Image (tube, rainbow, N blue to C red):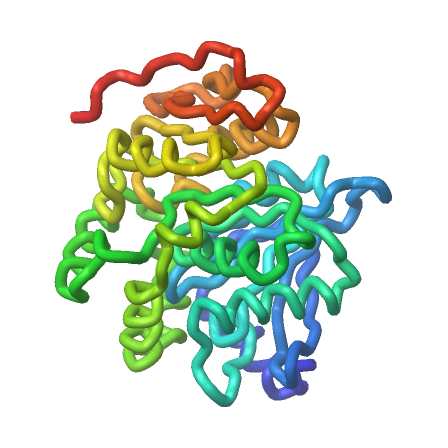
Amino acid sequence: MPTNAQKASYQHRGRRHPRRPASTLTDKWTSIDGVDVFYRESPDAPADARVMTHLHGFGLSGRYLLPTAELLADEFHTFVPDLPGFGRSGKPKDPLDVPDLAHAAARFLEDRGVDRTTLVGNSMGCPVICEFAYHYPERLERAVLVSPAGGVINQPLRRAVGQLARDGGREPRKMITVATPDYLRFGVPSTFRMFKALTQYPSLERLLALKIPTLVVIGDRDPLLPGPDRIKEVASQTDSHVLLVLIQGAAHAINFSHPGELAHAIRLFMDDRPIVDDPDSPGTASVFEIHRGVFHPAADASPTEPPARD
């Protein structure tokens, strides 16, 4: 657990960033493998609620995932951890790669007494989920992969930097105030190490090996991913258990920029219902189901075709 000095440091940082958004989730600490781990948990989840755990992306904390996580916390027992080495959590002695982070997530859930969960990840969180499924399939109910990152599409580093720069101009301005402190704390050496581990991770092979109901959510303005047609082609190579949804108007950080649309799609997915646009999230963004395998009971529903990508 954090010392008084560490807590004072965190409070001091909070005063330096007064616009840090308040959360309806409860801030908590635990210790995993000797590392202090900060996490957020829904305070009033029903006793019989299904567990949903949100995993953050590269260099970030779970803070930017809160807009979506909070919308789902009334129905699901919700956890949003900062994985070891990220955000407010402590740094392990040795840097963690993608498999290490998956094992750390598993030990966090064990520590919280969670036997089975749905994992919702963004960007780097998606490979972590795929690795978790590879090692702990019996502990994973469903997977939600939002803007999955990694692999050749983000290589080499200069290409990824360019993609991130283009994405930054497409995200809400408030995302900068949330992400910048996380990136600064993560540091340049950690960034290079984690980038190498992420791009070398066999994301496609692990995705194709998934055997559970899986929702993949992409934005048509995301410069870090190939176009929807290529992603649909990959999804069709699985054993027909992947549901692919496009949020038109979204870039990479969908959990932050389009929480209403994403939470709506996740609820429908969890109930095996066809994905339709959310009438309660008006605006330029629209949700379209562009691929559905035959795994789900609602598979016979006819999805709406999205407009062509610009």
